[in-house]
Image 1: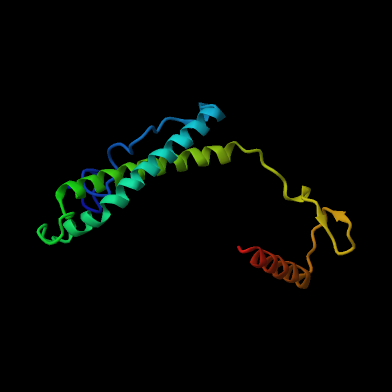
Image 2 (image 1 turned 90 degrees about the horizontal axis):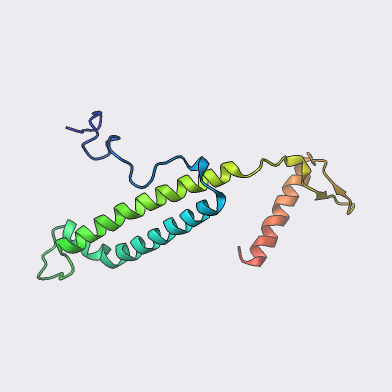
Length: 151
């Protein structure tokens, strides 16, 4: 019947059936196509989000069995629109996350030692400073600078 421990996949949360969207291998897609797919998924998320924002109040009231005479937006139609938009949003977000993971995977690996660092003498060096007091003061300084910038 698709309960929590079942493997039929017919109940809520089952792992059977499709995941929605294209589950094709993204490794063969070009970078420009990935960017277009990412933009398309973002647009679909925005559209679904707007629908969800418009219908959320009525869908919640309908789900809580509020009387339609008191709450005119508490209709089955709003509830169905919200559920469909929510499913579309989750599907688009999953696709966007897969594309993002693929884009991250394609980025060249950079070594952490090539970062130029200016020491207290004004010299550029790649040598890592391991003194705890120095690291603590740098972290504090960085936080205060970001706080003054409004972050």
